[in-house]
Image (cartoon, rainbow, N blue to C red; front, side):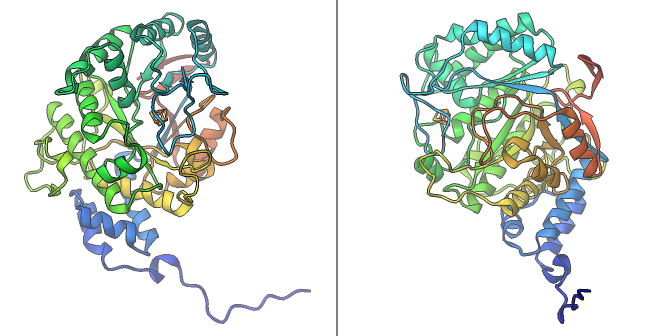
Length: 439
Ligand code: SF4
């Protein structure tokens, strides 16, 4: 019989072993639903007491979404990978004539619409490259075609970067005020069936990172302008943070500050009252245009905005942190972030973005086991069933990435939450097979 000797020194439990007194004042603010400062954020990223950070993020997440976690049944449609730009972190784009380039025609798009209906999907997530060879009408025709064959499926389409590109190809872009052309574009897309905006293209709002990794792409001001116009038109939007490449922690925190100031402004327009003593970071230039008071939603009993509260919406629904995958990109010499950093980033996002209703652990990029763990670390949503995700993928995965509703529900239940199917606007979906309605 084999005997195992007890270790002479028992390993310390992580929480107590790494207790960090710097977390105590932060914990007090979190309990009181007060906005955290950039300095607080730096401690959250730096502390060895990772479990202390995750625990606070879980507290906020459970306050905002007690007992539940969300998933959806969706389809991704990447209409073209031809792109005029060549962002260093991107492995998706192709130049015209290059191996693997594609642009989908309307027949293909209609076919995808019919398949989405057959599978009971409630959402299309539609993004692509900045294709200089397509006319503006291609985009309105695409939305109208999907409306025809899949009238109930929500069309969440086009990142801010694509929308600025559309203003350019429609020849309505004005350098002195990009909002004018973007409004023209969004009004027409909305008429054609656009329901909301995804959140891509934000990367990390910082001039240094912008210059180093994606200098020809739009910067923070233009990205924010596009979302501002979308909100004014009553369209909800989302945002991302692509991190773990050339970015630093303080730049990620500034990204969060800019986003929450932008959300302060959206919520003020919707009638939310501000905190006169709320913290506003000094010296973050991109957040200067947002003159709204600080509005937090993370206190006990705060009312979260939802689609049924307003005649028309116009706010950020969710932030999705996206870990950078080096393979195939110009930055493939970089290691990319590892699991613990991804977990911590979800938690820090939940704690800093106190006025964002949702934080998403996008399972395609995080993997499903990690996304499940992230439900314990601040995330309340793991996204959907997803078929054909071309943009980027977890290491070793192909572009056909699909999971079943049963897998998503199981992952959520194992994490201790009730799985709730949501539509794009986070309304509960009531389903009878493929037939469904949102409540
Ligand atoms: S990230 Fe977007 S804009 Fe940049 S190269 Fe890739 S597809 Fe084009």
